[in-house]
Length: 247
Image (tube, rainbow, N blue to C red):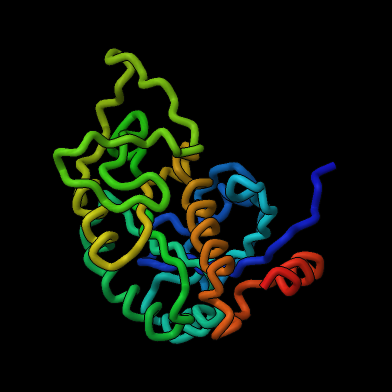
């Protein structure tokens, strides 16, 4: 039986335009499966326990998947409050979903706690490629490198399947409307983490949640969250006692 104990509980929100795959990402991280979903009405909820960091802290992420339509925007904003982590999602085949990221980010900055950790998620890369490609961005916690730098994604824990032989490449791949470089540059400019995912294939999904959790735990360790005591971070009683003795 799976160990259900945890050291931290973190509140996450998933936000972005409708049909960017937020619900599919939630199903992939909670149930490890892919399912076509109907548009979210209001919010949906799911959770999973992850092992995070070198010391293997057990973190229970409680995820609120918010609707991406304008009619629900006033409702979904209320779920931003107290969030420790946020996945800001766009569809790499739909330029307008990336163009709207700025508006979603403004809402998040306005209504969420000031120290919320945000990762920009470029989703649906399976529609443009037969395998995940090296990111022109970061290993966790590293600054965005210059374009001439050799990129290294060896720190990613998501599976990287062997590319299919050329005779097996589908002919119906879509054109990518937002490049990896553009997405990563936007993330760097706004102080966000960056990852590329496929909810269908499972590429990068665990990374999206783990990298965000690692940044949240680093902020907890540095005391950056103590000032606000956001409801999105809850410590196990034993962990609270340990921190009170060492600080």
